[in-house]
Structures are given as C-alpha cells and as structure tokens.
Length: 332
Image 1 (tube, rainbow, N blue to C red):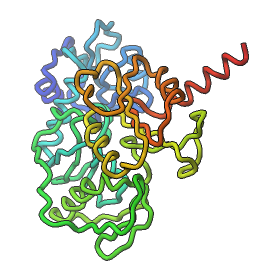
Image 2: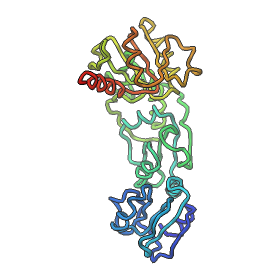
Image 3: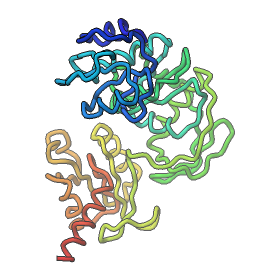
C-alpha cells in the first residue's frame, strides 16, 4: 500500500520526510515484522524491535521518539480506529459481503467446515484483520456484533428468513440432540434442542448461498453450557450426576433459557442465579438468587437444593477458583 493511501485512510499526520513511500504488509506484532512492513504500534515498547526487523513505517498514537528518519512516522488519533479504516478499505476493495447474526450462530459456524470463500469472524480489530488478510475476492463473512466490532464491516446483510424446516429431531435431552439433516443421522450431538433453530438459520444461509459445508461432531459452546456436579459442587463427568450447573455468560439469552428449563424440566427443582446489578431486569423470575460477587455463587449453590442451576454472567472457572481458595484455607 502506498504511503499517501495510508495517510488518507487513517487520517494520519506524516511527521517526517521519509525515503520510503510504499509498504508490503500491515503488521502489529514486532516479532513478525519483515523488511518493508508498516507497523501499527499498539504497544509503543515494540517500536524499536519493529524497526530492527525492517519496518518501513510506524503508525503511533502516543508520544514517541523518532529514532530513524528514513522510515515513515505517522501520528494518528487512535491506532485501533486507524486499523478499522484499513480493514474497511480492504473489505470494499475485495467486495466482501458480511452477514450479521447472534453469537450462538457464530459459535456453531466455527464447528462446521466450509469452503474457503466463507469465513466466520470473531474477536477484536487486530484479530479480525488477521482473519481477513488472505480472504479472496467476493468472499462472504459471518459475524456477530457481540463478538466483533460491527463498524469494521461495510456491506452488511441480515440472515435470510428460514422458510422451511430441514432438521428433524429424533431424540433429545436438555443438552444433547440426535437429528437428521439432508438424510444424514447425527447421533447424540452435544447441542441443546434450544439451539436447533439457530443451526437451522445457519444451514439455511449455506443453502441459499450455495456454500458447501461439512457438519462435524458438535462440542459444547459457552452458552447454556452444562456442568454436572456432586453435592459438594465438585465437577463430575457429563451425565454423571443429578445436579447440573448451566452457565450462560450473556444475560441476553437468560429469559429464553429460563422459559426453556421451566417447559422442558417442569418436574425439576430449578434455581436461577443472576448478578445483583440486574435485579431490576430479572426480579420477577421464579426461584431467583442475586449474587453480589462471583465468589458468592458457590455458597448459594451449596446452601440450596436443586436439580438445575442456571448461572448467568459467569462461567465454570468459578468452580476452580472456589476449589483453589478452599485448598489454600485448609493449608493455613
């Protein structure tokens, strides 16, 4: 990319008169900089290393000592915003179409093999740029606004409406599903029936866009993730207990999951744990407990009888943290 194009796209200020005017690649890890690259200094401490490795230009947003006047030094307001502008230019230049969906569909899509002209995007701006670097002309990407910055993308479309159901559920538990799709039987997938409509949306997109794909065996995603435990809230093997903790990191899906549990497990003793900051949103839910700190969750679980405990805005790391704390207490 030419220097004048970089300045125009990033709204940058060239603070010296360099001998270089073109760059090979855009890089933000000094360890992988090669001769001719443009280095974006998210960490100003890496600038000298980038120069040593052959950088022809430095984009920076913090006070920086110019140490080599032969290369280009470009001052910008914000490195992250500058990279977003460069990503958008790349997307427009390659005529990339982006389909917007929720994060569950993205997480399902990450477990399905597709053609190279279809890419599932997730992560921050730097991660997104790396994923898009080798994307072919006229490719299609799938992203979720909760996992990636929507402002990076240009030509954005919503998923097509599903007009007919193509997944036939044969057997299921709360957390596993056996189903038929395209005359193929997928047995005991670790995929809750709750998420089958999302899988239907994804497969419908593939069908409409004529994208070849191959379903793998699904593994658990972070949303509505089941962890079986004993009475001491110690983790057991999947299906090895009558006590189940269900972790949901995002409160957006909580009401849907509460209703699902009440409908599908009406026989069970169900409790719901929400952060105290969300009392106003979820105070009307039955059998609800509000925790102030994540360390309070295990205490609530130990002091209440349940078959299923839906724990919102947390993940299973709280169990390990509680176990470590208990071991340290015993040692002292």
